[in-house]
Amino acid sequence: MEKRLFTSECVTCGHPDKVADAISDAILDACLAQDANSRVACEVMVTTNFCVICGEITTRAQVDYAAIAREVIRSIGYTHAETGFSADTVEILCKVHTQSADIAMGTNDEVGGAGDQGMMFGGACTQTPELMPLPVALSRALSNRLTQCVESNDLLRPDGKTQVSVEFDENNNVVGIDTVVVSVMHTEEFEIGQLRRYIREGVIAPVLQQYGFDVDKVAHIHINPTGKFVIGGPDGDTGLTGRKIIVDTYGGYFSHGGGAFSGKDPTKVDRSGAYMARYMAKNLVAAGLATQVQVQLAYAIGVAEPVSVRVDSYGTGKLADEELTALLRKTCDLTPAGIIRKLQLRSPIYSQTARKGHFGVENLPWETTDLADVLRDLAEI
Image 1 (cartoon, rainbow, N blue to C red):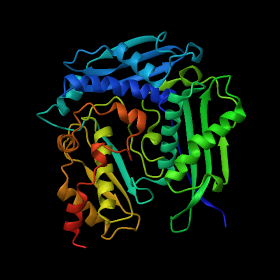
Image 2 (cartoon, one colour):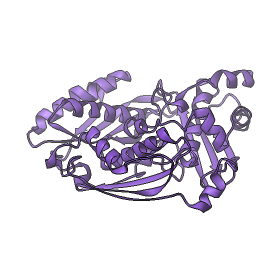
Image 3 (spheres, one colour):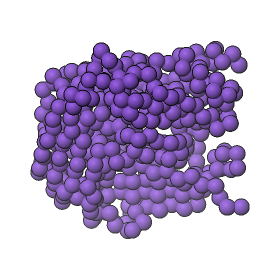
Image 4 (cartoon, helix red, strand yellow):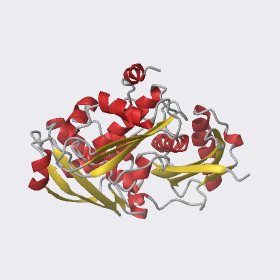
């Protein structure tokens, strides 16, 4: 029989798009640190030794956007002139203006409406301890491990990508790991054979072992398959805020809504709604009410209550999907203000999401399972 494979990818924080995300979220955090009511929609573009910061920001905070961008670039590891993108030499252009008064009219604290229309999704399943799909969890763990290696190995550079293909049986149970792909930027001095051994032994093997798999049992492993990855980062590919939305969520395993996350304050339900949907899905699974869940929320601009809430348990629910939806409606305040209060989203916590991931990461408020016991008791099962 043909293998039943599902593949997800991830990128390191030195990937051009994630550099842009990191700058956007660092600016957001800097604004929130001084003014918790900041309205921020910050977009960044990076290319060869050039960075553009634009968007709409209304805040009482005094923030040097260019200085923040330069520090983020430095912290990621772009400090070598030969990479074509360096914290010390990059040209930075700022084009920022205030939030539209028409949008502010429906999202101010008196009205409390959603910052835009749109739909958001959150998912959870029992494939990993963090209740994430295994393909994206492995891809993320590999990328984060790559970043650690870049910090300790002078022959590596920050840009990198990972990809994992997981085999499932007809009941959607994990069979094993079929393919792992890792590409990482490096210097001319890092000989390809040496690099491949280093990545196999220092990145792939320990990450797979962490999740209970043996690197020697993976059918296919591709490490820098072109044989050379010296030109990379923003010098090799232009980066834009919000372009890695599937990497930021579930690797395609669950659905994604219409908007990106980075650079947006929590009144933007593209971000806060997606975080709340993850929180609800994870708590349903943690409560034992299903082994796989997707939650959808949808909003209208300027309207506080969601226009729809939907649970899909893919036939794994111990209650009907309509009953699971009713449980969430009963226990969760799904207005933007309610989500912000519950998940403490006016705090400067967003920079880490651009670097480590938005979901399946410890110590993020939407990753807690404090609602699980309540849901289990209400379900009476």
